Image (cartoon, rainbow, N blue to C red; front, side, top):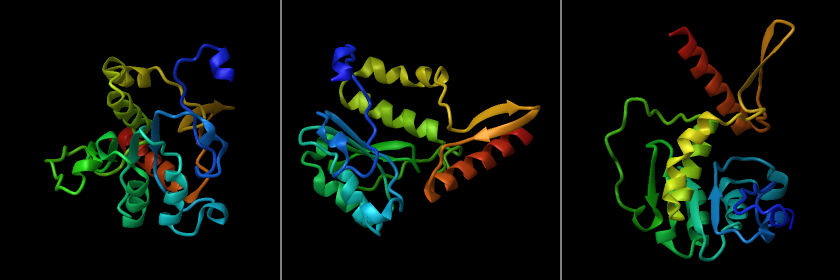
Length: 198
């Protein structure tokens, strides 16, 4: 209601906990994005990645475009694929190959020659940008999808790998709040330190 009254044409609404029992399930989503599935909130979502994926896949609406981050866990993939009703409108994002693959051809071999820069690691901001890009593209908003890279250059994301200075000391702030997030934040710190010393 607040978005409608403010004249917002398109909003990105993040699910707070899981999906099946989260209030965001009430929104009329025409595009559903599932990011990394990790062991988190196990007391509510389940004790395995497959159980958690099932809870998160509940956000998928019939007829909506689906973009999901690839998982090497077969139970995760099965839980998401089971909820999708149109494989031609669903995409896996193979972050390890930096490529998108439609569900309808996901069973085929997809082993392109990889760029030497791609090693399976991807920072939060790049991941968010790539998911936004394919979501816009799949909704046939081609002009907007091409603007994502430029938008990222002008985006300030407080609390995500944010460096601040306090009393002459540099401090890194990051909102990682579970094991998966901490692992990715630490990996990004290591990469940035290596880049700064190279």
